[in-house]
Each structure stands twice: as structure tokens, then as C-alpha cells.
Amino acid sequence: KRDPNIAYKGEQGGMLEEWAELYSITNDEKYLKLIDAYKYNFLFKKLEEGSDALSDDHANASIPVSHGAARLYEVSGSSNDRQYYREITEKFWENAVSSRGMYATTGANGGEFWIPPHKMGQYIGDNDQEFCTVYNMVRTADYLYRWSGDTKYANYIERALYNGFLAQQNKESGMPTYFLPLRAGAKKKWGSKRHDFWCCHGTMVQSQSLYPSLIYYTDEDEMSITAAQYIPSEAEVKLGGSTVKVSQTTDMMSYNNQVFFDEHSGGEKSRWSLRFVITCDSPARFALKLRIPDWCVGEPMLGTEGKDIGHSTKDNYIIIENEWTDSTVVNLVFRSRVSAQPLADRPELCALVDGPIVLAGLTDRDCGIEFHGDIENSLYQRTEHTYGTYVWKQNCYTTVNQPVNFELRPLYDITDEEYTVYYTLKEV
Image (cartoon, rainbow, N blue to C red; front, side, top):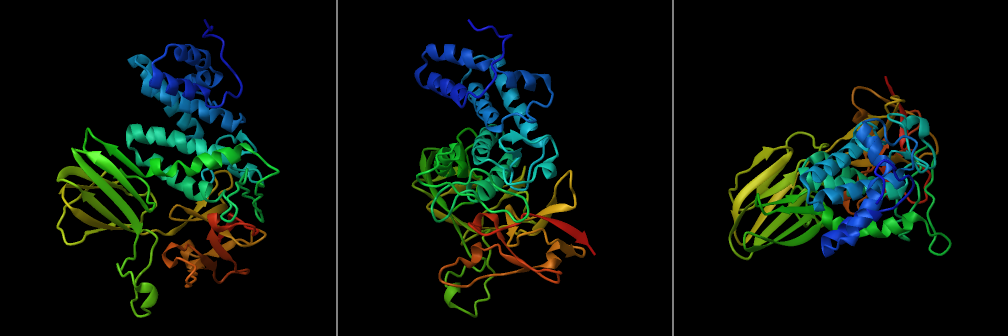
């Protein structure tokens, strides 16, 4: 029997989570013995002590251990054990995110190691944000979101999807970049198909299978379906004896699908104009919950086509409780704006973020940005209108009235260009 006073150190991958998963499937006690061999680890002891458990430690050696604690919370029979493992998972999040801070992209590691709290500016370089850490932190956030419904976890996931999952995969070859460089004048270094096999090749494959599980969540006890992420998708679930189909697409604010071919439509375009279609094979009463993102400016715009359906707002959700029949269309629009997000230890350095999307300047150095009052006064939106582009899914700008003007694009659109994410901002 393992001595609980001896804590395991070192990288153990996701084995604790796997033993817990196998025990939940088989109920075979041999997996309890394996769980027992792995659960006494140094990370848990440091988290119990309430001190900084992560700084300068190997980032991706620790995150999978939090998955083990999370899965043990779900499969443990003892109420004391369950409470302990939930607290460990929550304390890990506090250590990794809440009390540490992060780059605008969600990363918090330099090289493969956790950056000390609020020291992100000190570690900006070519080796920030290892992709494995992005993938695994999304999985930790998903556990916590499923348990609590707290939108702070869904907001984190959204930021990581745009500025990690998308930004660290080559849109032409599909290859990952091990790290996401954040220094001025950086370039992404892509893995090759035959001469590299990084850990990030593996998590990049895993990440592509994760999207469906992050979009919709159902709760049969409270009879609800939650749309946590705004990604074009379809889902079919059983709820209240009815088969419910939910789909979402990006729509035009004018709801004019011919806007591409109608130069006089004047339709306002936004990637955050969404159209949901809810279809039931038999009448069912349940709540449709729509997350209100933390970047949303003002009140969301909500409408239902041809039906008068009431809604309420609670805990950062729009809640539409209804007796759903046949097919119902729900239109939803969020407004976003560009914000400047500074580094705690270098507040003069800021990233520009449009909603959840980090913008990268096409410049080989930090040119600085002068602004007066509002950073948006120094930006002008730039849109390409061609058959090969989606007008409503562009977040491109150019700076104006600057000593040196340059273009900004979503970081996930950058492939081989030199780019800069953090700029010296000067209010004039």
C-alpha cells in the first residue's frame, strides 16, 4: 500500500483521469489500486497548503493532473472524497488563472513552464503559450463549467478557441505551432508533416474533436439546453420525451441573405448576428439558455420570427422558457468593440482585442499606437468584399493618424507573416 506521506513528483500525463474513467466504466477494483498509486502527488499537497503551487513548474505536467481530480470528483462514492477533489480542481483553476493572470490569448507559460503571477511582460518571447497547455486548460474549464454553469469558464474557453485552437493551427497544412510567439515582430514556427512529431501534434488532433462537446449542454433536471459557444452547428438531444434539434448559423443583422448581390441593401454585417432554429418532434417545455459573453457591449438584441416569446436574463444568460412546438427561429445579436488589454507588470503594453478575438498587427516591430479618449478612434475597419471572403466574419482594421500606420488582423488569420500582438499605447 502506498504511503500517503510520500508524494509523487514528475510528469504522469493523464493517467489518473484514465484510471478514474476506466473504473467508472468497469467498476473493477483494480483501477482503484491504480488510482491509489497516482493520487498522492506533490501538486495536490501544494494546492492543499494554499500557496503558489505552479510558478516555474512544468505547465503541461500539471494540467492533466487537474483532469484526474475532476474525474475523481465525478466518480467517487464518498462524499468527503468528492468534496476534496472538487476543491482541488477549483484551487488549481485559482492558481492557474484567477491569481496568475494571463496573456490576452489565455496563455500563461513561457517555454514549458508556468510564469509567476502577473509577470507576463517579463516573459514575452518566441516560446509563449505551448499549444498542449491551451488544449488541456480548455478541458479543465469544461469540467468546471459543467459543474457550475458559471459563464467565466465558457468565456475563457471562447477566448482559447479563437486565440489558441485556431491561432496555433496552420490553415493551409493543418500543422500546429508548438508555441505562440508574442514578442514584437514574431513569426509562427509550424511543425512539418514528416520531420516533427511534437506533443502538440497530438493535442492538435484531439482539439479538433472537442468542439462539439463545448457548444451545447443539456440539463434534464432543470429541463434546459444551453448554447455556451457560438459556432455554426447542429445538435439533436432527447429532452422531456421529445427529440429536440438545435441549429445555429451566422446571420446578417438585416436578415437579408441576398445582401451579397444587393448593393443597396445597406445591411449591417456582424459575425455576432446569430440565427437559432429549434425543432421538436413533439411539444416540449424547456428553457433555452444563451450565454451573454463578457465582451458584449450593451444589451443583446433578441427576436423570434413570427412568435411572441418572452425571455429573462439571469447570471449572464438569456433564458427563453417556452412550450416548444414544430420549428421556432430565434435571432440573436451581440455588439462588440475593440478594447486595449494591458499586461499587469508592463501596463504600457496592450493587446487589442475585438470581442474575444486578439488582433495582430502586420508589423515587424512595436510601432506604438497614439490615441485620444478611446482606442477605437485610432482604428478604421477594413473589409474585403469578394466571393472568397465572408464579409460578416472579418475583424480587420488599419490604424489611422499614426506616425506609422499598419493593418491589424485576427491572430488566427496570421500564417507566415511577421506580426506584433502587444503595442506601446500612448494617450495624447
